[in-house]
View 1 (cartoon, one colour):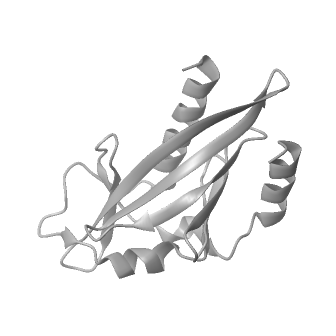
View 2: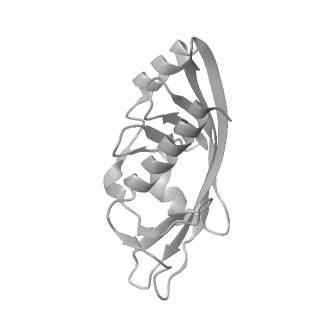
Length: 159
């Protein structure tokens, strides 16, 4: 894996954690149960999640995923799904230019969701078994708010 791929990986993972906000808990909240898969679908389907440090994901209702990376000119194309065990997963191919040549890296990642007895939904990034954090809808907007930028980046990369 090249240095730029390592940097891209670090930026994507950092963006995901920063999107979580300040509400971190080390362990699973007491009494929390696996979140119903339909609830998770409703949290994401047809919405754009914007990361604090730039970049976004659009979770299309048909299961496709469009991403714009933090690194200038980076675009992600993939799919997303929710498992029966309360996990939101995506498989995304990320593209960018490096020294005039298109580069590519596939990422597969999941988040696990639980609902606390008070109804608060908590999540954590699974590949790294991160700390639990409160799900925040403040980083999401309805619709594909970055479609124009996504299309331009995709065209610029010859995709």
